[in-house]
Length: 301
Image 1 (cartoon, rainbow, N blue to C red):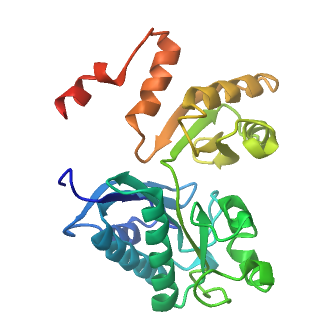
Image 2 (cartoon, rainbow, N blue to C red; image 1 turned 60 degrees about the vertical axis):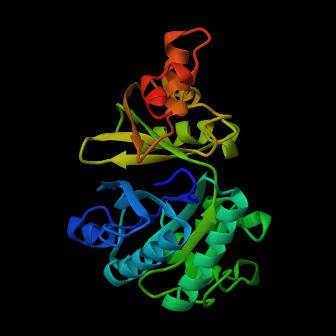
């Protein structure tokens, strides 16, 4: 993609991570589209969720995302959906992130366009969240999604939770979708050698900002039943202000009180190089390191 083109990133999350045939049909909405590049997609059986990362020029990206929302509505029925990750929609969240020659205001405008069109095209309730939120209460995705699919019918009866676009009635099988604009997010999970979800939930509550923990960290406990362990699943909403290594170390610190150990970690989807470099510099104690010293960075100049 030309360096002069306006490039936006989108990271839609779909509530399907077990039926890979369905996942592939949704992903096909992003393949072979001029002006759109599929960068990554990752499915998780325990979470029963697929996270997609793509970039593109504004108009082609908009149409590809709208097509994928439609395909998710066609294929996913939340009335029979179970999984560890909170969800309220077949296409659960659609965040836009400014990447090149675009601003956060451009991302907000695109979120509103997609939200309005999805509401009309699919008769789907849409909430705007994060930077695109229309009220302070809707900035935090956790508050928007509280109640999940099963509780949305009652929630939408409250005038304070009237959708920004679409009907004030939950789609019977596809629920509600949140569309927003935000900074690049790092989805970072830390695995613990305990199957006790109560312990992991307690650790997550200490780590996340709402529980008095790290400012730009959202966290929850998740069971990884196939492995017999649990996980502190985190979203780092601004890695430039709350580094990955801080969340990792805080999980380790809080786990000690329960005699629990970290047995691994994972990054879901793509991650900015600067976030990993920051972590490497911390653990290795490298002095006065610069991104200019990264070979691949110099090759792209």
